[in-house]
Image (cartoon, rainbow, N blue to C red; front, side, top):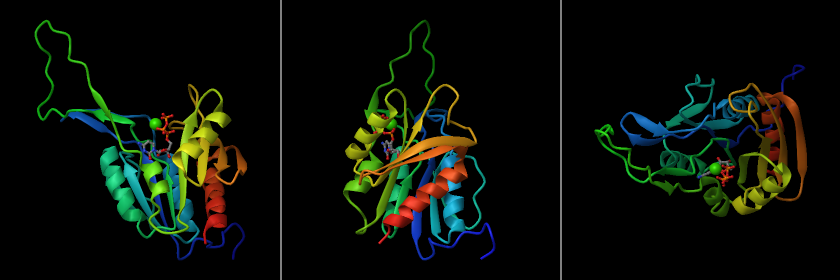
Length: 225
Ligand code: CTP
Ligand code: CA
């Protein structure tokens, strides 16, 4: 192999990655969304493909060009994302939930545009919980030994929050980012710590999203059976 070219250590493997942010419609022209750019998920997809994996990328509202050699499945809402991730995960060796999934969606969808009413304040928006896809994937593994990875953006006590979330979700690895005013969302770079269910902690120094992606695949590869 030429210098700088990785060994195809994911050859023969199928990996599923979710990326972007879900949008939960209120009416035909409005939605509740979030600021996830999808860049980390796309970096995971590119690096996995470069390491020989068959890659399915479930892309929620990213607007990014499809990476070469990757099967891209566009989705909109959390419910739609869940459906496509679970379908793709049935024969996957690893599933990485890099998407920002809306925790709540509007309880009702107005089939016509919501209009102002003369002199009246608007009705409140009632929300309901969305399914927790990562917890479901972790609890009901589609195949034995499937590696499940989550992402979390935390503030305050980042490590304690991350450990608690890893246990709550039941995944194998949780990539924890510290977020603040200008950090992570939409940026080209990332800094994180990867927590493992077996107790491992891998700090990832500030750097390109590709570098974090490579470390995620190193940790996944070490756990594949
Ligand atoms: N996730 C998911 N389904 C949801 C919410 C989150 O699969 N309904 C996944 C995300 O893709 C991510 C991980 O769970 O990989 C952690 O997301 P996060 O929002 O940090 O976790 P929550 O359990 O929603 O906790 P919080 O209340 O802090 O938002
Ligand atoms: Ca959440």
